[in-house]
Length: 88
Image (tube, rainbow, N blue to C red; front, side, top):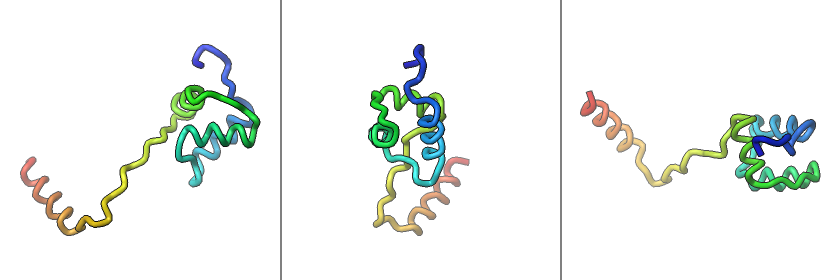
């Protein structure tokens, strides 16, 4: 919690920071919770994981939406060209 000393500190914090910044990363805050329990025997709440990741490590679990595999790249290109022209 913001007013208390962080439950994720020392080696756990540094290792988490390195993992978040690596190409492997995490898919969710729940995955981070499990990882902390497994590797550091830390049981921390979802809120704590979110706070540490979002506020202290300046990271986010947001990822771009998947693109439709059926979409036609040429149609997208044409749409973008026409959109730019109409907004000028």
